[in-house]
Image 1 (cartoon, rainbow, N blue to C red):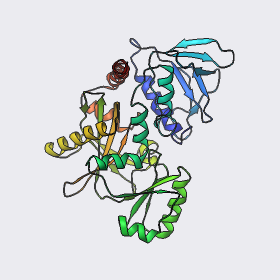
Image 2: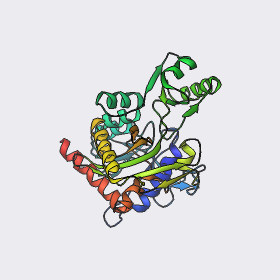
Image 3: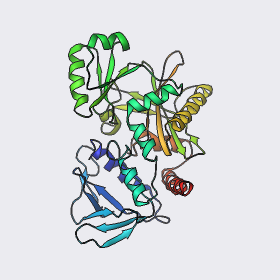
Image 4: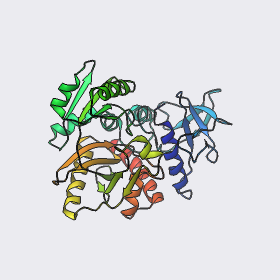
Amino acid sequence: MSAEHQVSLMSAKNVIQAINRDKYEPIVIGIDTKGKWLLLDENQFLLNGDDTKKVEINHENNIKIAILPGSGGDLINVENGELITKIDVAFPVLHGPFGEDGTVQGLLKLAGIPFVGSDVLGSAVGMDKDVMKRLLRDAGLPIGKFITLKNEKIEYQKAVELLGSPLFVKPANMGSSIGVSKVASEVEYLSALSEASSHDEKIILEQYVEGREIECAILGNDSLQASALGEIVSNTDFYSYESKYIDSQGANLEAPAKISDELAEKIKQISIAVFICLDAKGLARVDFFLKQNGEIVINEINTMPGFTSISMYPRLWEISGMKYPELIDKLIQLALEKTSLSL
């Protein structure tokens, strides 16, 4: 039901295409925009599957399903209550609210199903930019200045006085730059507040940090690996939703990033520290700004980063020597490992 529904479909398509069929039998479960869970045909589960703007779930010949709580993976037919199949592990390729924020993770835990990625807490704090930033700040990790608004207002001039101009206005619980605005005037500011509040009741005002956009992929539960770094070179004013997932010309993904080995190692270590601080598991992408003077500023963590054809997470692992099918296999194994450790 997220605003990132279509991106989730494109990511899921790539994961399903890459999965090792000699080792795994994929079961495709789609969640439509109204929240219904559907068992889909693995070979025909998308319509307009090559167009992120038009892609949608194929509702033909699908079955409405539910996960039976406490069953360890039983899927039942909603219409007649009959058992359809049992799943061993879930890969929730879901971006944004109702998927990346701990809600689905809680459901899967209640059902007793191992799943890829962070648990309830790590997913929730990774999605909420306000909580995420406060935890990082309290851990002494480098973040930019920010102000959180909830049911209160702050005048534009006061915001500029505290954060400088331009500044960013963001919904606290939304990913992929949805509802994000860069503002440099009172008119833009008021419009941005209206846009952000249409996505979330909590709004974040952020200091604009001028610098290169560097990203690092993390893999693991307790024993963590950091990938080679990548750099986003945006061809627009900032790295927007369209640049990330729709417009292949909206940004260039330079990987590996052209920075010194010493600086790269420092960013990798901070990425691991962020991952641990926010209780992430399995996978995450940590995004940074690298200022001209070498100062590193954490932007955010993504606990279920994109897996589309132009997404940075799988690409960073590919240049680090891990092919896409191997990455998917590793993530599934980490999900099973995480569950066995928690028993």
